[in-house]
Image 1: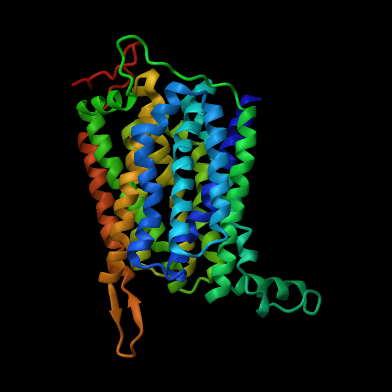
Image 2 (image 1 turned 135 degrees about the vertical axis):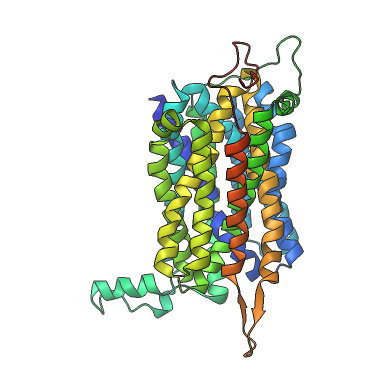
Length: 436
């Protein structure tokens, strides 16, 4: 069944990403990388999204069948990721991360394009396929509860009741050098999944290249950029940048925040993955809400999810509540980002949909996170206070109000100025001007 193969594709795609991404923000400081070195490593992903926008996705869209491009890209990405597990020096680490990202990031658009090209009804079916990506992210997270457990503090199995043994495993996370060594296994897990997808891609439905027709630009991204002249597309572009930046601050800060309020290190990934569990349910019902609420209200609810989550972090810093409120991650992702992808698929020209997806990935994976990675650590420094005892603590309560308020601004812009037509443009794929 085609949808089953597309679901496996999404599972492996996001397993790769979910294996290493949540913990890398704490891993790099432990490698003694400077602030600028950390930014360079993290920027590899964002810069690759920009390169993908202007070259990779358009190059793939016009010259290769999507499934073969995916296979080759995941092979190179997987080998480079395996290398990351075995180096702790900056320049080799940076080079391997750059290679991985340059080949992995374009595949996010390519897998979306393969899915859209092979499902019957994108509004109905894409969410059901994409939710398997979320399941893949979760599957990558939970084994690290045990991998990152501090086994030196765990009684030998059988010497105590099972519940006591399990409690010791779950309640004691590695620290220091042991945590660094354990975290390196995230790259092995991600690399193995990448190689698996490289092989599996050859079994995906054939999705041929889309050659430029006579009179059409050979640079599909130029056609995509021209569509920003349409007011509602420009508004969506601006709001997507805002949302992507706010979304990235969640990843930059949350791991450190959760540990600061008492959550053990081996539970950080699972605690954050609560949002992915919620995303499964949200993606499953996304089509229902899209048809009932429409594009604007669905996206607005997604943005406001960020505002509420950061407000809870700011005013109620309790471990249980911090984990529970991550349920809103599913609303944030599905109701905004997934909806943007579906919207773009309907309103951009058919011959350049991969490049059109890349246009918004430029914001979702490129410029927005790049800004978040740049300002996030600097805001931590700004809000760090030194107590009389000499201990340094971060004033998370004040800091989280910044992305919360920014998300509200994005929601207001969307409600006031985003007015797309009720249907896509004419048969030639051009975006119609909104009705007044």
